[in-house]
Length: 302
Length: 315
Image (cartoon, rainbow over all chains, first blue to last red; front, side, top):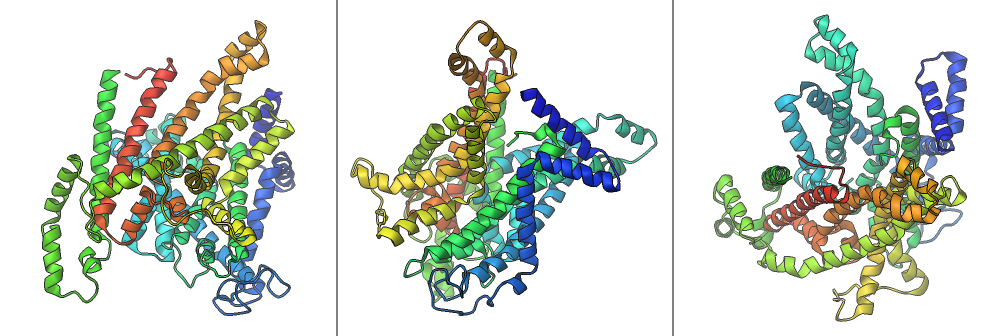
């Protein structure tokens, strides 16, 4: 029973990794998708979100940061999600919020993964003193409570969208560096590295042209699993008032603002939070599925 | 073993030293002047200079750093720039709050997360398993600050109920009001960790159930329940204990957001306000304390590992 599902998964993974062309590739994609219905669900959630984010100004019925109806009301035909304490349309704010969330999430994870991979490859390939120093720094960063680290750094930089992206990226780097370093340690034992060295390739060339492409799939898997937590980090910072500054619509900041609404209006907290939850859920489902398909070594690692 | 402990202690000290420099420098280069905050915007330059002298801010950074480290090593956490109160005293008042929150949160995690993980592994691929796994991934996706906000808003809007948040109530003073404060807060704080402990218990137990000695235990005729309880769990829970240790280390420094929302006057809230107000004697000492708690508990967990699992030997 156990062996059977495992074997099937390995088979699917092998299928996904084998290069194929045209119609065959489509059929294989379909097989992979059928074996991972939850991953497909995650993908659909994210795809919807990306579309909403891209076309936010067309989808949102009202302009944001403008009075558009009686304040602190529940859902109605005119205001699908109701209005917040300033009389702004909550649906429009949630739609625009998708943009900010995705922007921060993708950019932060992109920067964090690239820098983390670079550090991991350097540390793993060079070994010796470089590795020892880098690994102690990584230990330190991982030992540190994440949110407090983010708060200290954002306090230094000051809140702005760019800085939120930077801070969340900084929070991602150590974890990526550690996992990638581990993969590089085993990767550099391979014969292709030896062969490259024998042909006279420099260290930089081996790292960039030979090792980097081989740890890239691992990097992509890690990046996907990190997108959810990056978006949560942005929302948490914005909730505390140190994230995306107003007047930008941010789900986290909108939930925070709803707490001081009078009369109490639960809708103003409910919908932005649902948006965060569905986004993070989408990335988590997609990440889990990608990990199962692309990298069986990491299965159940989280 | 002794050499291993010694080496780890040296390494822990090095990490803490490194963090202390990072925290000190970061807080000094951040914008905002504590003297200005203390005296208000109408303060004269002479007054500001006097405050700087009093706080030692006119000395070179290296001197300030050495003086601070000397203080902290002696157990004196310094004095708040804004309120002039002793950080050590404030810490003593707030530590029990964060400790109670941590203990109750851990209790929820252990009482809910581990049993659900076990059931999920034992009844693998059954509807119960799917339900538990779905709950776990939901628990990891839902932001705690949102659930916390709704926990306060929904009862308030529907029934006009609000937990007593005005002042901090000790457990022995008024147990019921105390639990009305800490109960919801700890449960919300536990949601994410419950989900990860559930997943970890499940995967770890499944791993162990595949091993030969489990088959032996079954073959000699032990009932399924005995195999799980007496043979499998002992090994399966080792990684779970590790993660619980790490979680509690993080919680001992206070839960910034949850304490903020439920108006619990714990360490997390203290760190947050001190960072916001740039009260850096407070911020730097508290951040150091948190780091020290994490590093030391990490060490203890690693050593416990060897006790729990005789196969692991450190050299």
